[in-house]
Every structure is written in structure tokens, then in C-alpha cells.
Amino acid sequence: MLIPVLLSGGVGSRLWPVSRKQYPKQFLPLVGGESTMLQQTRARLEGLPLRDETIVVCNEGHRFLVAEQMRTLSTKATIILEPEGKNTAPAVALAALQALKQDKDAVLLVLPADHVILSQEAFHDAVRQGLEDARKGALVTFGIVPDKAETGYGYIQRGAEISAAGYRIENFVEKPDAQKAAEYCESGEYYFNSGMFLLQAASYLEELQLYAPKMMAACQKAFDRAENDLDFIRIDPQAFASCPNDSIDYAVMENTKNGVVLPLDCGWSDVGSWSTLWEVESKDEQGNVLQGDTLTHDVTNSYIRSDKRMVAAVGVDDLVIVETADAVLVADKKKVQNVKEIVKVLQSQGRGEVLTHTTVYRPWGSYESLVEDGRFQVKRIIVNPGQTLSLQMHHHRAEHWIVVKGTAKIINNDKELLLGEDQSTYIPLGHCHRLANPGVIPLEIIEVQTGSYLGEDDIVRFEDVYGR
Image (cartoon, rainbow, N blue to C red; front, side, top):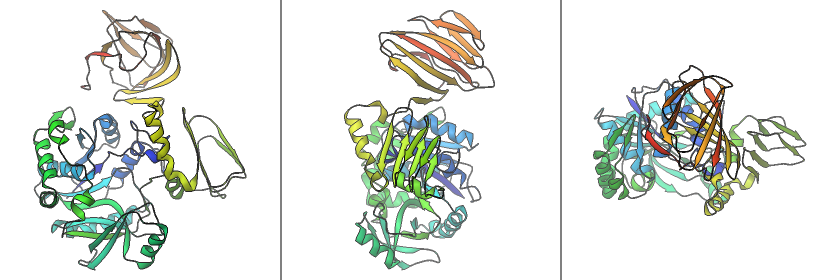
């Protein structure tokens, strides 16, 4: 039986302004409906011989997003929290150590949580073909059969055929220039490096011990010292800090004698940029991908997305236009790889637009900043049914709460209130307070904050069901 391992540590900076550090692309519904990329990655595995467990490796800041999205799928998930990102080789090692606690013969299907696969059937066929090699100890990677010369992907050169489905790995090649990419495609010997793997947990750890012993030792130590926290496994930060930062390709696959590449033609994309997202989406007769409230005239081969406001475009070709509540991106579709340079500038300036959206998600629901001006701020807060915020107080601000939908259970110092729609209460500065939704529909309130400092770090928590 297979254990799915979803690697969910990416940031997706080239898909800014939609993908942001605290809410990156794997948690967004970018392709094919309302399901997020993480959810689609897990859902497409149905029909394979899976164990009743999915291991997700992510960073601590995304833990509640992962838990909620897996819960929505009714998927049993073991969520491993990395104290810091150390690339894919340590992440797979932690997942392998966890899998071996359940099954000494565990086979892992390791998948990035932010890829698109259009043909689920072709993907399933390839996984089943690779299982035999993986069970014999081979480290199988899936090589995407190229449909055109691409300079944005690394390549894998195949060697001799060693099984009914797979080839020995001859060489890993970094992203080539246009001429080299064309030569690779014409040769028929090269595949895109997908970053997807099928391998026995024990076999992978043996190879890691052989080729990256310091990494293996650090991962083992950090895992042995891990603590369970609610539904999460917290890896020991001190032990993990000494772990080298390296990809599974560099640490293991380029060195191992047990590597196998299995060709895969399934409509794959890593959705690494707005241009690749344009490629996989359905287009109108003018070659445009239009999402949200958009209006065009004489526009061709463009990607236009509106999240909040109407976007109108006239007489343009090959553009990417992306609108969110607090940022607008306009880019040449051929140069969208350079969006990451904008992100670097935002980071250097300490701009909040690189971190999060105006809507911020929390384990209990979400809040959206509507207005902020000096000594006051207005927020729209949504609390999911049955959820409770922490018992807290603020040193620098008072709050006014108006219920606009649902029922609110409120603690305000020594008072307990039950408020319905169109009712309100005032939380003076320094009062200990709590908000909960005892109902069966989402609770929606408007919060007006007033005070000398309105930052999110002005929170003193006394009790929190989420362990923050």
C-alpha cells in the first residue's frame, strides 16, 4: 500500500500578487474550480492502492490551513511541521521516518502540493508501473515527456532500460538555454524533472545515510525529539537547525545507483508562473484566459484575473493582468518569470503585500481589513460554526463589535453575552474578552478598533484552544 507524502513548503513568489508568503499557491484554487491545489493533489490519488493516511510536510505558519483543507476532503492527515525550510531531501526524510512507524515496508508517493496533472488516468498508470521497481528498492522519479523545448525546467537524461517501465538515470541537467532545450527535446532521451517520486521509505533513508550522513543524523535526531501538538508533529528546532539544506536531487538522486526514471505524459505543469497557468487553463476564441469581473476589447493571448474590482483591457496582446484587493500586476507574458524580482523589492522595503492578503485566515475563520487610518481600523471577521477565538486582551486598543450575521457568544470581562444580528457590544481597552460562534452558520461581525496602536502583535492570550 502507498502512503501519499505531500510537500507543502513552497512560497510561489512568481505567482504574486495572488500567492503570498503566508498564503502561497498550494492553498489557492488557481486551476479547475473551487478546490485548492493541495486538495486537488490529494484528490487525484483516489483509485490508487493507498493506506488510510496522508503525510503532509509544511511549515508551522501554514499548519491550520493544511489541517482545514485536509479536513474538508475527509482525509486523515499526519501533519509534520518543519521549524524552518531545509529543502526537499530533509522533508522526505522526516516523512519516511514517520511512515516507518506504521509499516517497515512503507512505499511513499512523494508529490509537491502545487502541481497540475490533467490526465489522472495516465498518472495512475505510471504510478502502478513504478510500484514494482520501488518495492525492489529502486528510487523512482517521474520524468515528464516534453511537448516543447522549455528553459524553465531542469531535465533528466535517461540511460539503459532496466525494467518494463523505467530507465536508469544517466544525468540530471540544470535549466538549459533555448538551443540546448531544443536539442534535448529532439533527442528523445530527456524528460522534464517533475520533482515527484515513488520510493520505499527504508531504501531512501539508507541512501541518504550513504550520501548525506550529516543530513540523516540531523533528521533522525530532530524526529526522535519531536513532540505531538494537537494534530501536528513538531520537529525539534534545535536538532533540525544543524541539518544541511539540500534537494532530494542533489543529496540522493544524482548519487544513488538505484535511481530509475519513469516517463510520464499526463498534462503535467508545476504552475510556476502566470504564463504556465495561462497554458493549462481554458481559453476563449481570442486565446484569453479571463477570470472574475473582466471586460476586454481587441485583446488576445492574455491572462486577466480580477479578485475584487472590474478590470478592463483594450488593444493588448500577450499580457498578464492580475488584480487583488491591495495590488495589481501588469506583465509581459514572456517575462513573468521576473515577477520574483518585484517580490524581492517588496521584501527589502518591508512591504506587507509580500506576506499576506487583506483577508487573513486563522484556524477559527478569517478577518479582512476594510479601512485603516491612523487611530482606527475596520475589519470584517468571520468565525466558522463551533469555533472560538482565544481569551485575550489588548494594551493599546478598544474594540466595537457589531453582529451582521449569525449568533455571537461573547465574554467581556465578567459578563457573558449572546448577541444576534444588528446587536453590538463595546470592549474597552484592557478588558479580557473572547468571541465564539455557537451556531450552525458562519458568524460575521464588523469590528471597529480605536487606539494608539492597532498592530496584530498587541494581543495577550490567556487561553487558546489552538495552542498558539
